[in-house]
Image 1 (tube, rainbow, N blue to C red):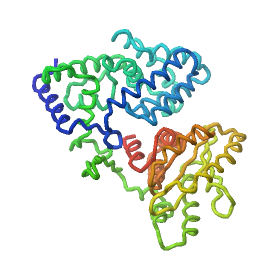
Image 2 (cartoon, rainbow, N blue to C red):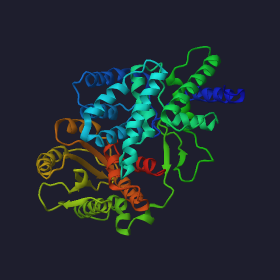
Image 3 (tube, one colour):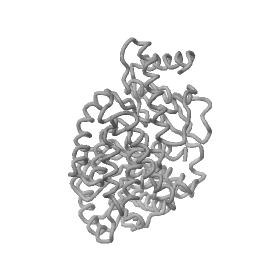
Image 4 (cartoon, rainbow, N blue to C red):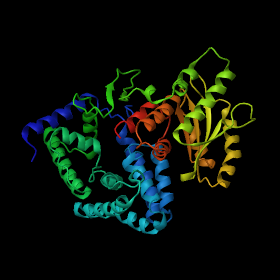
Length: 446
């Protein structure tokens, strides 16, 4: 039973949420308009993907890819992050010798439970499966973390029945912790049981206050806003969170790294952004130097580099390779100080893909992406990215800001936990333009 003073706090949080005109922010601090309506529409499409898998017309990797592709374009549940798609990727990758068993297990556990006890049994089965992999993995950063199971499964259950199944969001747990009503348990099974019942109790408090039924989504959105507020007692290891003044009706959250980036970069690389912005060189000279320094930065990250650049004909600026994971990227660097837009490069990019993808596949690279590096972008290139990944051998099309590239290198230099595999997972797991904020938010609390 939640104490009366805490019940009053929950009501205050609810009222604060109402005063914001029910604003919901995504992980980048942008307002998500009509999230519930968008979710209702998306559920229909995700159910279609689920039905194809459950009836046996999708193999598990096809299911994973289709789900990933849809959620990257319609990320209304945060599934593209660590506990969702990354967990799924690591689960399948570590189960490659026996994907049939994983398929059978997944079909059993992601289907809607008949009741809470059934849900807990499903969590226990997947937790044990992931735990057996995690326990014996030589590098646990590449293994599926059993601590992701509660979120992962409750996402699917909510797709089937949003009114019954709350998603086990870390943000909700953090809100409950701040209210001092959360208790950690040893297993995901125990944690979800506690979470489910606590969520029901919170909804009842709000129902008594409002005189109407409260949905899981309403409770969830309320605590998203609550946990999004800056607090003076955040640990220093976390990124500093600053709420910026609204600009053009857009509300943003700025994440600040707790270290000086230049302390972890050699002086030549540290001036890469400055080089991209400079006006005292010819565009040809600036472009040539910028291209070489971008390739050099990728080399410091641990990639094998094949340089092309100016004077080599109709070629991209570089091909970067990570043979250990059969991964390669075609790289084009753009030294535009006013922001990059596609323009006539559409045709050149298609030529690069048509020329180099077959060569890379012959070398054994099964995962090929395309990276455009620029100081900034005038458009998000999402339509072009969708078309390229659908119609060519490119699996990911990635607009990457120069500053984000430098932060990848800064975090890798600063912390040996941030290796090339982890960086590639973030590069390929993000939809849209990757900027420094995305990198800081991901790696600051490692």
